Length: 249
Image 1 (cartoon, rainbow, N blue to C red):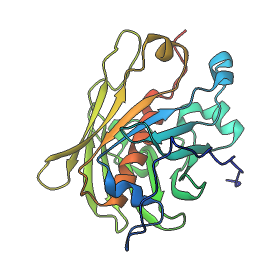
Image 2 (cartoon, rainbow, N blue to C red):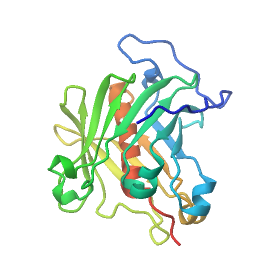
Image 3 (tube, rainbow, N blue to C red):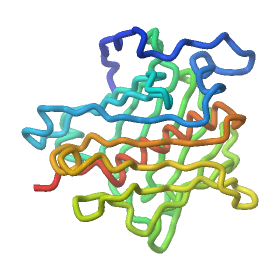
Image 4 (cartoon, one colour):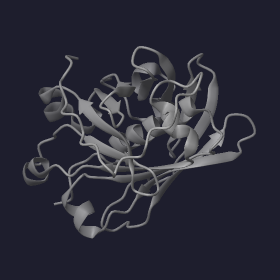
């Protein structure tokens, strides 16, 4: 994909103050050492709401005090968005409050991906690769084969399974289904719940008219910051797979 220039997000008191550099932690991920929860707010795109034509997604990533930690913006081709919509390939650039790209999330396009019954086959399984800094892979998320409920594996840079994600049997949220949708995160060994990715109900008007979604991501504060970053990437994958759809008409 061609590199696109994205305007630097505005800085100010609404941004979380950057912590000191930490040995062994990728630049920009020092923020994640201090928190155990992040909130992801997709920006409302007026043109998309009015026309139902897919635009590039943008997200503000905040801490629980409402301070912005990161800003994420999508890079994808216009015909990929128009023709493939939520099944498009994309790159998400995640920048810090200095406009420096600290995380890069890429989902390759796959013609046959999405069916959980066939997800044991690579061409039928959605996955995203996560780099931090860009060019250095820190992990990936892969859709798993299942009979009905959505499942995902989270791998580290050496392709070891570190975490697992299990979703509900009905991973959707419409006007008739107004509760939060939870995807639980478990340790790979022992199946102990260690976190959660929650699609939050945004209110009837917002859910009915737009695709702008809100997510909460919780994890142990002492979890490896690289795995925290991969969990954030998992939230974006879940958004595209289950909640990036045309608003109800």
